[in-house]
Image 1 (spheres, rainbow, N blue to C red):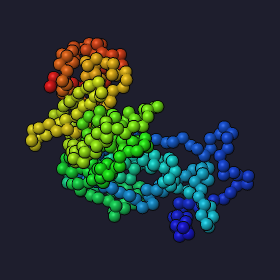
Image 2 (image 1 turned 180 degrees about the horizontal axis):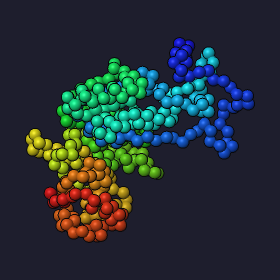
Image 3 (image 1 turned 90 degrees about the horizontal axis):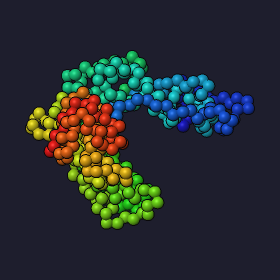
Image 4 (image 1 turned 180 degrees about the vertical axis):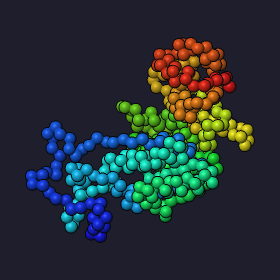
Length: 380
């Protein structure tokens, strides 16, 4: 502790805390918010979109000291960062990780200094992880640009924790290799080794673990419904036959090493939808130029609410289309694509400009989201 304190003091990251006369370390309920600032927010790309940008190389830089101590702490706020050691009390001069706003501040900092490369689609920052997507030759050039900016702003890259020009990488619980994405072995093992739930807390944990990879599981919401229904208010916990089947099926589907293709906006795209009284879902598929077949890039599903269960089959199919378009909008904007549905009536009525007028008012409000896209709906 002594050497660590002296080191951060010598580096100008902290100094000894000086108590002011009459100053209290407690919070005062006098109407003034002094040491409980609002939580900051900083833009970070959607995790699923970020993962699909990974094509060839990853620079996983963890700068020494720079990562944790890049932003000055306002002089009036330093007292709120104080910490106690056996040698006395200190306060931070630079924002350390561990404060509620530290990750957001650091994300803002990284977003700001790498803004030119972000705008050019060259890097995707996630805190101190810089992702570069390109071919081998472009990767070399882009790594140089990233390192040049890092040097300009005094960021030190921890090369012992960095990986460059890798064809197989693990990121946020996913493995990306050869244009494909699949769950990491560590995560699937955690699912397979999960014990049979004995209470609601364990149900929450299991659904959280499997739900993180729901995009790999067709009709996830329908399969998991017996488990998720246990979380309803005033529902008595009962882990019976239906729940056991649901539990084992989710484990089985993840154990079979599901694989998705990386989305490419230049490939022919289809959105397959389906619905029933229990739930609805969709598959975002793309045609591979290699084998000329369509492959899944993302599965989406939701269970129906009590109100949605009263919809007609036609409205349920329309609901599946609307929810799928909302979910995959970031992928579908600006490209022509087909929606494939097994509802022939929906195919015929969608050819009319007023087709959404026939829907439930809750669905009709999304008409602009649908009509703004380049859609061809076919019965399949």
